Length: 163
Image (cartoon, rainbow, N blue to C red):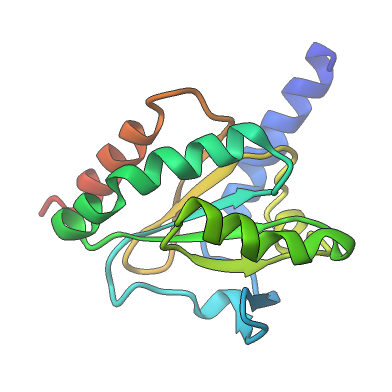
């Protein structure tokens, strides 16, 4: 990617973040086929994390595995909830539930086979994480994963909970 494209992508992300202080309204299905409207996602006034992934994305799976190891502690400490959004296309959607089950992920899982939510949020690459505060506003975005990056996520959540 050229420097010009990187700058343009960064600029668009900043613009889109300002445009979408709230989650856009897109109807997805959960892993069991139930319709879920994204603008109604919440965590009873507490922050929640949306993590975009795909079954074929190794860094995505590493990130969700790393979070899974500490998720119970995070929930006890902060009440945070994780919503994992698969962007697997329709022909691969049947691979999502077996992957989630095999990894033992205790997350709410939504399916975005047409990348509607991903596009509405101007997300280019995965893994991609959003933190939504207790008022439903997007307060943090992060693309990519390196080992240990999950610590930055929980720190951001803790900051949101400070009086």
